Every structure is written in structure tokens, then in C-alpha cells.
Length: 260
Image (cartoon, rainbow, N blue to C red; front, side):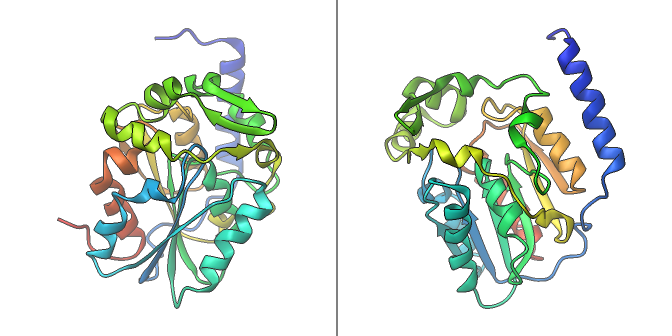
């Protein structure tokens, strides 16, 4: 076990204080039955990262849309998700993976959104400096694998296979690496102005073996929002390696029965 440093100790105290002082979000039990699901991808991916989840949700009679997140700036990404939400007829579950938890947190106040699902995702409070929050936890290994060509960032193949998609079969992980969408450096400077989890029922899937976002940070964010939380023995890409478990969490958020 890694010895606790002063920074880690102080971060733990700060996190504990934040959990006790901040009001919880809406209990996950207060859900509205939804017929739509909107999926939003994060960094190092494109909309195809939901390919294992989409057919499972569709087989349960849900209307599913995967947003093609532009990964340019946070306002651009939020606008892309909002356009998709505007087209939904009725209650909609909004699902975000990784960085797109920022988008879910911001645009989740949309009137069509009935509940939120975070898959190993960022879940900042309104105006919060997520980078500063993340620094109170040990830096995950994937961070060292980010390389830039000017303002365009991406993961190296080694880091992608080892730290991003560690429990995905190598052949499939290489396909995902091939469709990796680069992100603009400006995307990382954005801050949310809303915290939708304060007003919408929220669900969170923690990836216990995550090497892209620290699992303890995921647990802190899930606890802070009062989310219904499941812990999966998965890498950062749990929707690829454990699609049934992720699908069942989304179905619960939609007020539907778990698939068999």
C-alpha cells in the first residue's frame, strides 16, 4: 500500500469536509420513467465507444443517441449535447463517460433530462476547478501518456492500451485507439456553471481499476452528489469491458428493469 503523503492526507481531510458541508443531490429513488438515452463520450474516444451499450439499450425498447462530442471547447461540447437533447421527445437519461461528466453536469439541467449517469466520469460542482480537485489525489498513470501536437492532444498507443483500456482485449483496444479523436487544449480550461446533479437523480459507476481517473476521486464525487453508486472491477472503459453492468445502471436510471 502506498504511504500517505502530507498532500494526500490534506486532500482526504478536504474531501471529507466537502462531503459533510455540501448538500446532497436528489435521491436516485426519485426517478421518472424515461424512453430516451443520450450518451456522451469523453477524451481519447468518439461516439463509437458506446457500441457495446447501444444494442443492449435498444433491445429494451429505448431510443438511444450517441453524441459526437467535438472535443474543442467546453461550450462547443455542451452545445453539441444540447442539440441532441432538444430533439428528444420526453424524459431522457443523460449518460457521460470520463471528461464528458463535465458536459452532463452542465447541460443536465435541460428540461428533457430526467436523470444523470456518470461512468467513471468527472462530476464537478458549479464553478469548481476540477484540476485542483484532482490534484488532491495521486495522479493516475494515463496522464503521463498524453502527448500534444501544438494544441491537439491524444494518448500514445502504449498508454491507451495499458492505462485507458487495460481490461479490453488488445485487438479491440487497438480498434478503439485507431478511432481516438484528438482534443483541443482549450477544452481542459473550461469550468461548469451548473451542477445538474444537485437537481436531478444521479447514478455513478466507479471503475475500481481505473488508471485514467483516480478511483478514490470517483468515489468522492459519487458520494458528494448522493448518487446511487456501483463499483465495477473494470478499467476506465467499463462500458466496453462490462457492458451489461453499465447497461443495467442506465436502465435503473431510466426506471426500467435490469436486462437479463
